[in-house]
Amino acid sequence: MPNSSSISEFLLLALADTRQLQLLHFWLFLGIYLAALLGNGLISTAVACKQRLHTPMYFFLLNLALLDLGCISTTLPKAMANALWDTRAISYSGCAAQ
Image 1 (cartoon, helix red, strand yellow):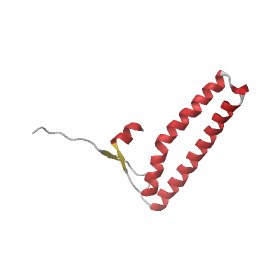
Image 2 (cartoon, rainbow, N blue to C red):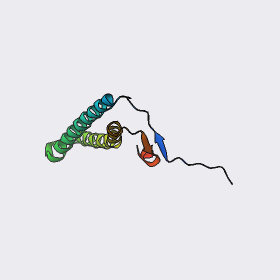
Image 3 (cartoon, helix red, strand yellow):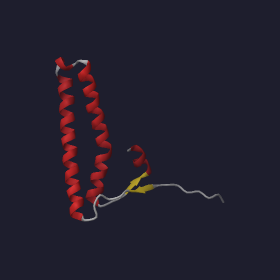
Image 4 (cartoon, rainbow, N blue to C red):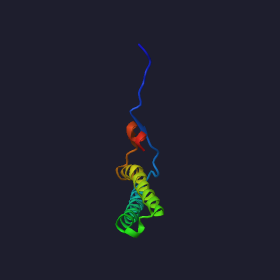
């Protein structure tokens, strides 16, 4: 019988041990997430709707805004969920996606 093992999940380190600090982290992360969504959404909307902004500089600014939306939407919701529900586990596939 061969010796084998598989990893199904990882345990993350908590930012705080007390419940009040975990809730503070949740609200802080939520504020940062909403600010990033609003700012990048406004940039994307302005560049897409305004014909005058269809120049190479604004094309790259639009790409940067969309990239930032994708990156922050990958990691921050999991961090908020961990802070709110006091969980520390993340699946192997979730870790690989992040």
